[in-house]
Image (cartoon, rainbow, N blue to C red):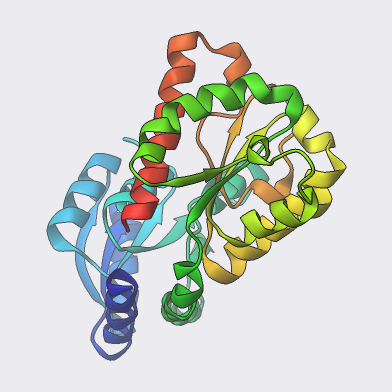
Length: 297
């Protein structure tokens, strides 16, 4: 709760103070033109950098409220720079790019930027995008605070999987067992006793879930129960209450667009079935780390 309240207060402060912005752009003329536009609109430009590494380093040093980031940099990648800032810092991101093709947009949207400007950028376009970005920043933080009380009742990790992928479930459970011994509640349908009202028990576990882990495969996607019962409840909880959802791609399959907004632990192009055992263990370790961090926050 304390972290979310701090975020709300920070967003409110941004609205009343002069907002600080870091420009990440490797073309000097464009960067200086952008700086002039921003200052004319009343924003404070705290720095201009032209590489991915310098962007993350400068963001850590200056702690700007927002970063305007060119996607295609000569040294490094603007989207990777945004990921670094979002992982380590509370910085709102707006992308600026000459490219608006579907592949670039698909990469960009996974960072959940507050805006996407296509070059050349004019004053009015910039003004509107920044105003909406700050409004959405505040609204998102406020919604998380309102949902905090509902999250108090969410104490479980819910694992959704196809029974045909049970060997992968067993591997994941082995990595999560130390967290279970420490008190973390981990639920999957093997825990149900014979004769239990399984639909009601699964629905109750979903209502108690704070984290959802999806073990995605063609069999997972083919399951009517998962598609019609489990996933809709998890997606609704993520939208309303901020339940954290991430997924592991087990075998080659077409990952549906509905999962685009959530984090894939492994590269969908390199599935668990295509990895050596040690590489699989590293993925399961990452899953355990993410779950542990979620329950610490």
